[in-house]
Length: 566
Image (cartoon, rainbow, N blue to C red; front, side):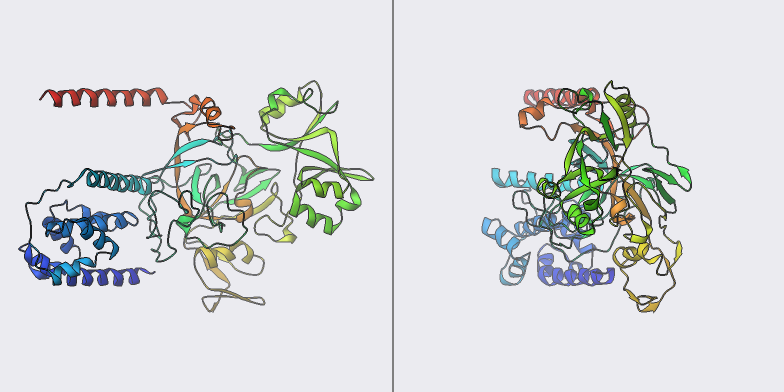
């Protein structure tokens, strides 16, 4: 829905409110016309039901207003003597229209001195829980939101099992575009897997002013632009599901390229505007390396300091099979293999492959080689290992899965570019060569009608040879370069997809531990309450936090004892 459509909807709500409450306003000693003036009628209503005027603000905040409207409906009918549970149920079930019946079909009595306290213990619980959810949703949406790290794409900086606080106000809190949804959940309801929201109506994109702009190498939380999964994690159906921007899967990556940059990757390293990107101290790049040993690799000869590292096998396959197009298609469907060497008869490949397909292709494992995901420090240490023959970095072959998915470019996950990162207000030339870079921006992110007719490009029905961008875009990737689904595959991330800036790890444990007991033992105490950004080694503020919590508990205890004495 557009802003004009929402304005008309707002006016319609005001008319409904006037028709359903004007007699009640009169009963409360107010004028009937006061029920018809937008916003002012809400202020008057708060005075009638003896509630704070700032509640009106909550009625304009998406998701929170879904909780506030029933509260105000119930407060209104109770102010006029309708206290029964059936009355509260009816006003909620009828979406407030039960007030029409009270307004026209009864002779209600205004009770200005009614008690604002709940009439029962259950009512007190419901009231407390409702306002706790409202407060938490407000903080969650506009100030600070908890996230968890499910993958290793930023390993070393952020670990699997880290729980983060993500600041919404650093880059400006985004107003939810999905107006009808369950509070405190993302795209699906717990335990059911069903959608937690309605796809329409939708608010136009709005964002509050931020404290800073996204900078190169910032770690950023965002909605995955290419998301079409039914649920955030765990959907393997392969079916396409349309999702509003604010309900797309949450991702965390490092922003290597900001709007206006020209970016290139050479041998796995980024160059920004021609200069090699210098990462902060805490960032540790990882690549897959082929380690060759003097003797067959087994539990006794494998380097002990690398036992926890991700690794895959190295295989030999007949070169005539490897160079067959149909075999390549089958390999892509059943795994991921990269060529690392070749002799007159065999090709050596590294990666993972379906065992059944490997057997059909007569692939054999190379016993003295293995593929390991390593940082530079681990590479240097492995080279000094007594059994090491060589440690060779993997350099992936060209792959059409790399954005912008143009085969003749021959780009790979290690080598691509230069590529321009669009900036709001910048204009680029459009032709058959440049369109693949910007087509999804024009059509999907900036909502234009794009038609290609031969060599001609039409935008919103008009022939175009250039395009001016409406918003900033960013290039977000993982530090775990050979184990990260990122911008290299889906392209640019629009600013309207940006959620916020991770600022603190408040809890951390090994999420892959086999049992809850094992997870408790794996708590990483040195990571609790550490900052995400900054120079030098992370510093934990857990003792400061624990001390503050203890002081608060002590203060609450002694305050309670003083009240009892009085």
